[in-house]
Length: 206
Image (cartoon, rainbow, N blue to C red; front, side):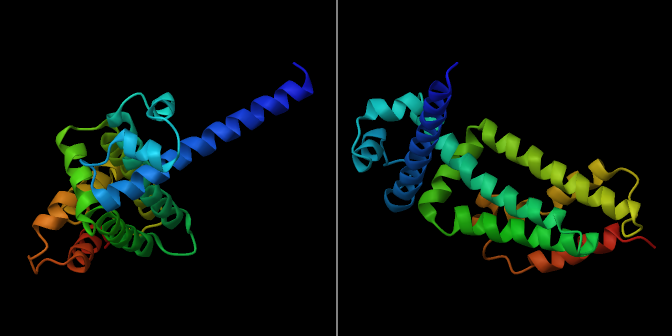
């Protein structure tokens, strides 16, 4: 293939990626402003000064677009958690503490603080969107990595890092599941800090 053709293909790929990203950015903005249920593909297309058909070129259905928005938000959380796991300048205990606190803070900020975004997450959970299952799986893998490291260096008393990681996920689900964060907002105890201390005690090596 001629070099000029390769350059053209690369430009088209970049332009396609940029347009897809712009669609997601506008969709997220409208979800926050108008609400997930009220926002239509036509609304998104109008903001971008294009036809709804152009939006459907990238997302075959409104559900596919909704899932893509949710995935992008979840990936932001995962990226921050991944940075914490990779920061070997901190002990595994401190990283796990920050991991749990950050997961709670970002979940609350992304999905619970804005009622309109919360509606989208409730639907995602109720309909068991694949992006939700994938997110849970990726968070589990990050936790497995962190717990296994803590076990190797003697910080955690753990024989099965995956089982321990799943226990951590289960223990903090109230603080990370958007619906439960909202439903339990008036419950004073345990706080996320108290739950994290409890987990640290349970994992601590003698």
